[in-house]
Image (cartoon, rainbow, N blue to C red; front, side, top):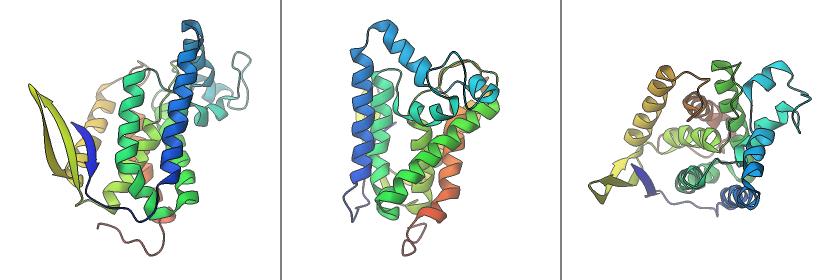
Length: 225
């Protein structure tokens, strides 16, 4: 199921959300401009490596930047076009409403904190993993958690590829609830040091978003609308 849009309007232009999408796209274009070895090197040098973070968070002789800084740089890298497209689509559909509930400044801090929480969750599950983790999905998972608390009854338009493509509207609580349940089940079933999709990061980011939302939302914004 692929989210296309929602039916909950925003009052403010989602400037930060657009900037985040544009930044991720520009960084990916930079990655593509590199030779094949350079693309792989960008993932290793700027992605989050749990083993490096747990061993020497402030410095590691084989890495270009301190591992603690990779908590942030890893959010803006992607491993492929479909990886980028999926993340940016989710950010486009759900991020504008969350930004609207917080304001621009609080939203960027919220986004980065959710990304860090997601990366730390994956590191906690697999502290000895040497597989680089990249992508905005951890931070975006936090946005999904916040959206669930803000607008559980909003309708989400999904594109469903099942023999033929068709659209269906479902309530946000159903789509996001099933999404979170899938992340939890996959996280429990998938060894954290195997690579592939970082399900623990998704689950951790989602829970961080739910916990941080009451702190970051504007005082005049009510929950469960």
